[in-house]
Length: 452
Image 1 (cartoon, helix red, strand yellow):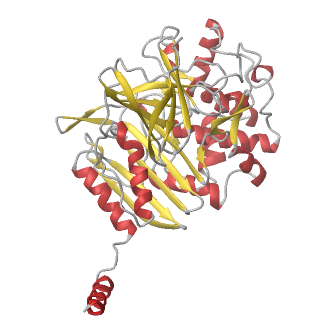
Image 2 (cartoon, rainbow, N blue to C red; image 1 turned 180 degrees about the horizontal axis):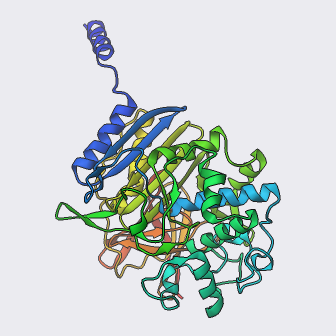
Image 3 (tube, helix red, strand yellow; image 1 turned 120 degrees about the vertical axis):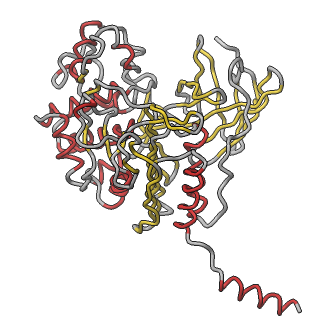
């Protein structure tokens, strides 16, 4: 009888083979779209084969343009991966020196003699971390170029946040300066530099640097939104931004997939420069959470994300598994979903069952004190320190990364790409929740650290 049941089960399995991973991934995104959680495009490949290339929802409600894998959208901070690659390519050719002070030759307007391109690529320059710094220095409503920002900086001469190379502070403005320096080294404009050195060689036909005025857009523009009472309302990018390098590249999910695969199928960089650029950047002699090419790395997995107003984008690759995962979104993805999407797609590609994509149960962070040393389920330790009103996450390297409130229940940590939440019992934080594209780990506090 048991043998007969086994035969029946085997026959049934043969008649109903497992659903292909691509179809399951499409179903996952279709479900997210139906729930109002995702509008945008996704491109997933494995072993060079494209498994999924789909668009969901509207790129522009006003112009009734649907999202497709070919729709260019705001890449936000993904621009930094292009800037870093171009800088390292020029360095490999001898056109610039990563360790030459920028004020000496390429950026003589820069009022800080010690800053180098290596500092900028590692986010250890000490330059202003927020464009808001320039609001009081430049006319309201004006178009702001990188040169404008640099002149304003030179006139104001604010003190650096720290001595270059000694600490980490995420700065998109610094990457704008890196792109300007690279363009000057190459004897061209920033727009031509990106087009000739990155977009054209890789066939990224959708990619371009956005114009300063939104009214000067070439064709229909993908807009940013957020959902309010189940309706999409504007949550768009800002007018007047003509600075490029740290952001402001528009590119499609299809071309981001090509960009991602270029690091395994034929990079812009010579082999030695690519290998060096994919190693952790060094800050005060310690390994950073980012490589010099501006990728997060854990073993064979590399990724980077971009976020600006309603746009959220992610590029992920796992060299060992041979997979590439890319998505772009324009409807203000919920913070808890950013990394959960990647974890779910990776599970489906491995033939497993993805986690339930729902809001995780966490407590509010307002008034919570998560300071102390935490031991996570993956056996790694994470220390959280307070310096004034700011909180910092400190991994084993000893580098401090500032934690920014992302919503009412979580912090985001640039430089580590971690989302941190808490579970409280009354006023006491009992558990720490740490998530990334690779997993979710709960931690227990081992020792309370005094706040400073």
